[in-house]
Amino acid sequence: MLELKQTQKLLPVLTQQLQQAIKLLQLSTMELAEAIEEELKENPVLEVTEEVSEDTAQTAAAEQKEADEKQDVEEWLERFSPSEEYTPRGDQELPDYENMVRKTYNLRDHIRWQMGLSDFDSQERLVAEWIIENIDDNGYLVCSLDEISKDSGFSVESLESVLKKVQKLDPSGIGARDLRECILLQYEALGEKDEAFEEIISSCFNHFENNNLKAIVKATGYSLEKVKEVFGKFRTFDPKPGRNFGDEYTPYIVPDVYVVKTEEGFEVFLNDDDLPELRLSRYYIGLYADKKVNGDTRKYIKNKVKQAEWFIKSIQQRQRTLYLVAKSIVKFQDEFLEKGLRSLKPLILKDVAQDIGVHESTVSRITTSKYMSTPHGLYELKFFFPTSIGKNNGEEFSTNVVMDFILEMVKKEDKKSPLTDDEIAVLLKERHDIRIARRTVAKYRDILNIRSSRERAAFDS
Image 1: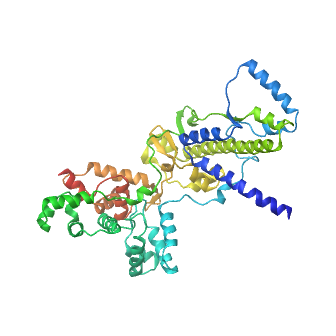
Image 2: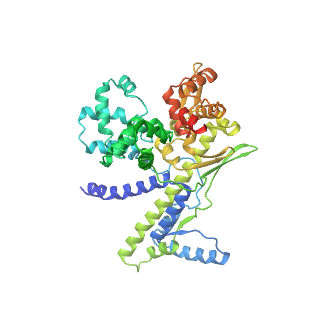
Image 3: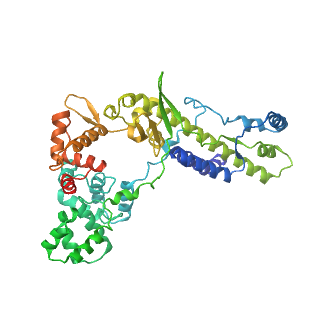
C-alpha cells in the first residue's frame, strides 16, 4: 500500500520534468537562451558559471571542502558536471520519454479535434479521415473526390456530403478545392448576404483573379464602383486559411548548427555562443547541509536542486542530440554539401534515428524550428528530409530536386506562352524520366510561389 502511494505522488513530478525536457528539445537556440534566462529568474539554486581569479577559486575550494564534510553534499555536486561533453548514449542517459508523448499538434489534428466535438457519426468519421489526410498545410483539398473515392472505396456522394460538414469547421475556408470555393466558404461563414459579391465570385472569378474589372462590368452590368467595392471585400479574405494555424512567424533566423568544410571533410559545430554554462549554487548546497536550517527551507532547496539538475541535464541532452542528428544528416547528405541542390537525396527520419540510436520522434522534435548553415546557404533541418519520387530505372529523386527542375523550366519558358502544369509534367517525364501527376506539379508550384500559367500570362502581358 505504501509503494502504491509513493508511485502516485512521484508520477506528476516526473511528468512535469519530462514535459520540460521535451520542450527544451524542440526549442531553437534563441528560444533556448530565453528559456534559460527565465529559469535563472525562477530557480535561485541555478546560476551561471563565471571565470574567477585564483584567490577566489582557492576560497571557494576551502568553503566547498567544509561543506563536503557535511551530510551528502559531495553527492549533490558531483552527480552532474555542467561542462559535460557531447558523448555517445550511455548508461547515464535519461529515459526514452519520447514514447510517452503525442506528436506535434497541427492543422489536421485541429480539424479532428473539432470533428470530435461535432455531430459526425462513426461512418462519417471514417470518411472524414480520408478527406482530412488530403488537406494540405494551406487548408486546400489537394485530391479530387473521384481520386479519394478510388483509394478509399467510399462513394463520391458520401465524400461530398462529409466534405460539406468538414468545410464548416475552423478555420473557415478549409477543405476548399480551389480559391473561388475558399473565398465563398469564408464569405458564407460571415453570415452576410451580398448578391453582387456572390454573382461576381461565382460567375466571373477568372476575370476577378486577373483583376480585369472592366470585363466584370461588361459581363454583369454592375457599375465600376460596385465592382471595386466587391474587389475590396474579396481582398479581406485569406487565400490560404490553413497557414495561419501554424507557429508564429520568426522574424530573425539564427543558425543552430554550422557545417564547415575542412581538409578532413565536413565538420559540425553547434551555435552555443549565447548559451551560458550553468551550475548549481554552492551557497544553497551549503545552506541545505547546515543543520541549523529549518526543515521547510531544506525541503524547498532540495526540490530546487532537483529541478536545476534536471534542467541542466535536459539542456545537455538537447545539445548532444542536436549534434548527433546534424552529424548524421551531414553523412547522408554529403553529396548535397559538395555539389548542391541537385544532389540532395531522399531521406527519412527513421534513417537518422537508426544511425544514432534514438527514437524517430526524437529526430522529429530536434529538427523542429532549427537551421543549419551550409556552404550552399541556410536551411531548416527538415529541408534535409525530402520525400522521394522514383524513376523507371529504379533511381530516386528527392522532391526538392523535382521542384528545382520545375523552377528552372518556368524561368526559361516563353513568357508569352507559359507552360501549363500538364506540359511541365510531360517535360519532366521526357527530360528526366520522372512521372508525376498534374496536381503534383500544381502542388510543387504552389510551394515555390509560382503563379499558374494563366496568371503568369496575365501578369507578364
